[in-house]
Image 1: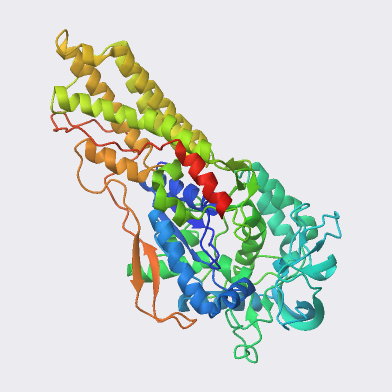
Image 2: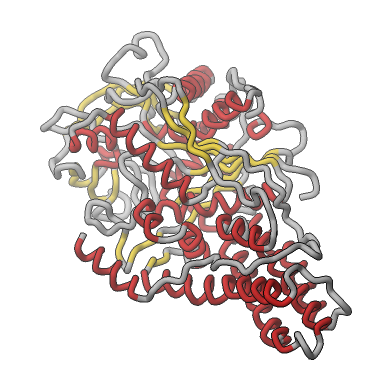
Length: 603
């Protein structure tokens, strides 16, 4: 990319019914941050947004279990999640909440724009309620046999086996996932999004997304044959009011959580712009400027969210912009861009089992980071995570990759190169005449910026990190082959050239690995004599204004990520003083494996 591009990194909104586990951040968290940090270093204008998703019946159910209000539960968990993501180093420009006044206003604006264009309509339909409580059962809280493929554990909104969109009333032998009772279906008036009105335009749009991961494009295309109108309101008292006379003051009708959650990408962008001092700044990432490559939107999530981001959200954006079988005109916000890419990861399992908070088969992000370095987890989730297929997390592999790859590879290269230079020369030496081996290694290091950058742009992050670690291996071999420790007396000029060459590669790798391991890269920057911020971290900031749900204030993640880091090799500064470094990566005792497995068994 020669000219700067406006890159929107739209990160899936973690649900606020509890803390998030490492399987969640494997899908939405670390990949989105690697991508954003790279693009900032490459000179592009990045806006990375998300927040906690706080509406819907699951929040109400969990709040009742804990004896608190839905708002109190959302307040607590939103802060827990934000702190975890901050500790993981995720560089959000804004991580906010769906209970803000701004989000309510933007959601209602999208609702009205779609309604005005005829893509939302009211009708009476069967709704599921709990016979014991009288409360609406959300589609995802109803389970039964799929009427299409016979899968016995299909959800009320979608079958995970065949991928088809479902209606709870169509399930065979439906049952509540909350208490196992058979739901009662009653007539109720709701508003629906007319998804069939977008079948042609979405089909044409999806077929043009040849740069998408094949599994995402194929999955989305397969769903087109079964598009149905989808309810966007529910009989609830926790959620965003319907902005219509006769509806807005009702305590029993709310906009449903799936509709407002995807709008969060837009509302967070608008909130960020307002806080930046330029309320119109969000438009650079959301509206065409005449140059097709001027703005690109990338959405990061797990594969269970593909249907919302590859079909439903695009349909909403098309409809609000006046594009669909019914035509129309853009709403008050103007025509809105559709996703450029939907980056979906597969699932992460744990020691051969599916993550399950209810069954205590879980590793919460906060617990993980209380015992291990954030970069150790980031490295594992990138190098061994579920980028293109379901992957199993094991403690043995976590320890092995940390010790054998990070510590013995990257950490060893940094430590012995800088220590040797500091001990024997005291500062970065100038290079003398270079040999073929020197030039070969430097050429590999320089070329890696193009290779690794291109892979990150294509969201092949596992391969990108593999290329960086391949360069680390080449540098370690070069250092062993040239053995500069033997040259201090025999050939000091040659020793200086070898150390200069290796230090240049260390500095290059520090840059190349920054998107993946920002904390470690900051340490290497300082060990090489650098000052100031190299890889900026997010700040947790309190916003002193009430939310629409009644919270007196709320916290957001934000940050200024402008640093001197650039995606290029830069010559190291000859003469800069060096001191013996401290280890940049902590080695893990192998006993960690047994300790963690015992902890899991006890839980």
